Amino acid sequence: MASKVAIVTGSNKGIGFGIVRGLCKRFQGNVYLTSRNEQRGKTAVRKLKEESLHPNYHKLDVTKKESLEVFRDYIQKQYGGIDVLINNAAIAFRKDSTMPAIVQAERTLFVNYFSLLSTCEILFPLLRKGARVINVSSNLGHLSQIPSSTLRNKLKDKNLTVEELSDLMTQYVDATRQGAQLLKWGKSSYAVSKVGVVALTRIQQRMLHDRDIKVNAVHPGYVATDMTAHAGPLTIDEGAQPALYLALDAPDSVRGEYVWSDNTVVDWEASEMPKHVKQNPVE
Image (cartoon, rainbow, N blue to C red; front, side):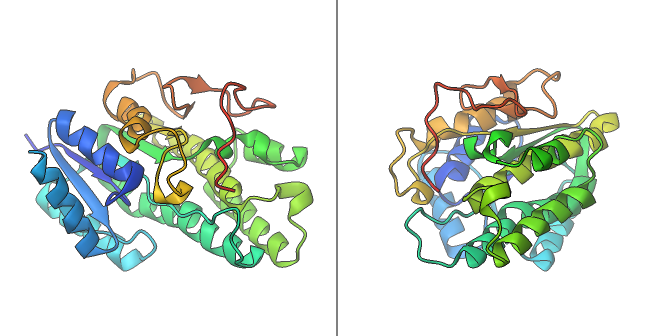
């Protein structure tokens, strides 16, 4: 029987590193820590080996198609398939960033949405029947973060396609280029990208349902990482827990959902986020 394989993108530090650590402790198979910087990735692997954990490493830059294809071919040759794929790689500009809004929009959407999409398009053919995919989003990925009701209706449309969603994400970048994004899209490119991730998750679940593959999006909580200037109250291991729950413990009935940091399924379409959680102040 082929060895099981779990992959975590962008996992040399932060929540991704915590997810790899958790998988190494419990997943019955090969766990891949990946990073675009090989030296940092191998340093992260050494840290885990010092804890008597045994992750595998492969360089992977989700923003580069060639890197994704090289990784795909390697996994195909070595294992023949993927059992768990956790799309964690992402960027965020801080609130006090002086980068122009259009630069923030272009870079954030490119990495957080479009690169995640290309990662899935290239790796999904390797998903085994019954595989689990977890797309790491945020509480800012809740649909209520989009001010325009027209846009919200488009994003939650049960018949929305990947092409239509990608077009909406491009429309946001174009609106930002014209300085016309605030009224309809809000002030946060990070929020738009993570809303896009949840909308994509719902589409992917529809597409993969017949293969018994579970695709879910997760809000990991406000975690102390480089992305949050280490201001979050949660450790990376605590932030890893909801993704680990979806990868290892969630019932098969949880599919196409938006899962909160306490492992509960949240209504993504609700008019407000759950009240007991403060808004993540990344942006």
